[in-house]
Length: 358
Length: 177
Ligand SMILES: [Zn+2]
Ligand SMILES: [Zn+2]
Image 1: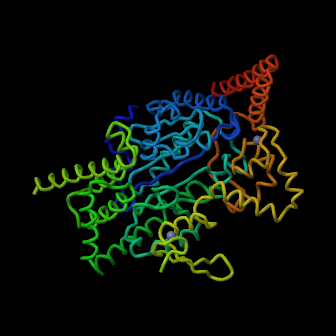
Image 2: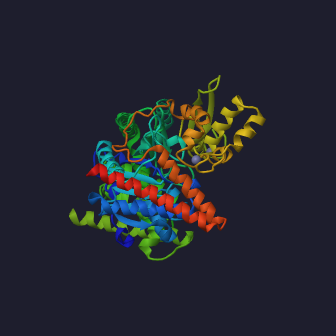
């Protein structure tokens, strides 16, 4: 796979398609697996890591359904390319920063990715645009069975799939749904949602930014426990709660519209204005403003843009994407002006397209 | 109202119910995120909180001397010490779940509220648990022999590993025929 080809193309989760995609960005499931005959990563020698990498790669070649995957050695990629894959959520930050032989295999649609030598030997991930956990589970379960027919996983009769960290033992499964919840943030209801999710063992975290700070009003909801419940039960736990959060968010949006449409429209229009005219802009400010504009598009207050455009801008304005699009390294100041330039060009083109149609 | 942890306005008003008295906490969005990540029951336990959870458990169960002794306990297969696990929050090999079972079980119950897997099982069990861990151990011994420049022993071990691996591939083939 040529990474430059991915640049400028919208990956699966950026499409803004799929059920409830105005609020649900993506549905993702990942499984943690280890190969029984090797120690966990922490006790692996460089030779072990290379052998694990080779074993998985060789087995992948034996599974007809998986031979189309593009395999890449992450340790041989440039720093920008590694971050580029992480910004598209095809690899984890952990895989970016790990050491030694490690790789990823990705399908052309960017729905399936297999990370090798992350925290566990194997991390299988399936991602779908919108709210579609059922399809995500069906696909990942099938891929897991295919791999399992070729590899012996570390498995314990009572504890299930054995993982490097006891927090993942059992199913090794993490189900997550990424939501855009700007109205719950504005109306300060988000904390209530957090607390109610906490009570039923679900974890909430912000998507972007350094550390744990949520930017762009994106929140990821996922199961916290992995042992003692079946995969379907774990999937349903997240699956059943998401419609309620979607409903809260919609009600909060209605409330904002009813209570003070002028203020809301003003806030959104100003955000759009800054994005169209800024000469230099940070990643954080871009996220913040795009979040308002995204809600504006959903509420019909902005009609030049589609949700897919906004999702694309969220990704393309991140540091590694900007540098790939520009074709060279940029420092922070350089990125801030490149980001502003990119936004101005993209948005004025859309405005022009919109005007031409009218 | 200002955030209790920085100068920004507090937009999150969290009522902490885990203590004896409900406690009001006022934070900005950034600090609230951080706070909620740290609170037990939110977020995935990171290395630090896992170590904390363990430490707390051990404090109740063991005296300092017993803990010191426990820390020195090493898995015979991968060689990880309990101290290393406690510090890093990551285990060294599948056998650790058996070898450190009595220490891990309370931790696992604490995290998951359960000790019994109810999900899918591998469709085929190609290798017994014993022969799996045997391979890990032999590879480790081989690496050690290479490190100590005991090349004769290393090549013996390599042959044993090969035989074990090939023997199993053989028997896998037998199954499929
Ligand atoms: Zn603060
Ligand atoms: Zn071990």
